[in-house]
Image (cartoon, rainbow, N blue to C red; front, top):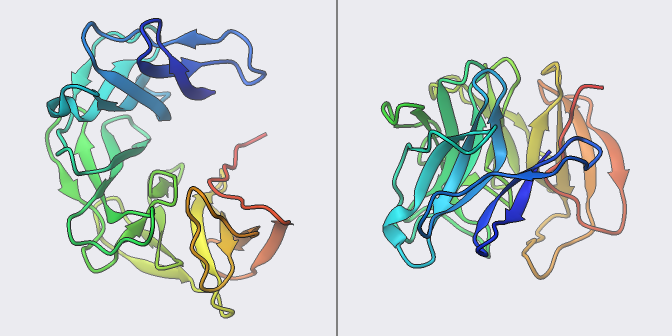
Length: 247
C-alpha cells in the first residue's frame, strides 16, 4: 500500500506498507525543502514511483518526479509546473516507460473545488510531453488523479461533466461510454482488473460535491461498453475513488 507519511523533519513523503498495514517504511527525501507525494503510481516493471513534488518555500520545485521505491534513490524530475497549476500523478504505462498525469489548464471550466484540466503523458526521461485529452472535453478530478489506465494500457477512463469517456493513451479513439439517463453525475471511474467493467461513483443530479459538503451517492458497475448499470453500494454517505484489485 502507498500512503502519505511524515518525514522526520516534518515534510511530506510517502509510506509503503504490506496489505495488512505491517512493515511500514518511509521514502527518504533529499536534503532541502522538497516534498514528495507518491501514493498513486508504482511501476512493478521498474520498481519506481511517480511523485508529485512541491516546496512550501521554493515554488520553482513544483512538478512531477520519479524515485526508486526501495530507497528513494535516483531522484529524477520529469516536468515543471507553475505555482497556479494543480498536477496529479495518475499512472505508469504497463512497461514503465511513460507517466500519465492530470494538469489543470487555465481557462478550463472548474466547479467549486473540482478543477478542470486535461490528461497528459511524459516519458520517464522527461521527454515526449504531450496532451492526451482534447481541450473541449475538460477532465474532472474530484479528489483523484483525473483518470485511470486499464491494466493492458490500451485505454484511459475519465469523466467530464458527469459523463464517462475513454480514450487511447496517444489521444485517439475518444468514445463516450456512459451518460446517466436520470441525470446523475458519474465520478472517479476505474477499471476492473480484466478491463471488462468500470466501477465508479454516481452523484445525484445537479449536486456539487466539495471538500466541505458532499451528497449521499452510490457505487455502480457497468460493462466497458457502458451497458448493464448495476448498483454495488448505495448508502447515506459520499463514496469516491474506488479501486478494483484482483483477488
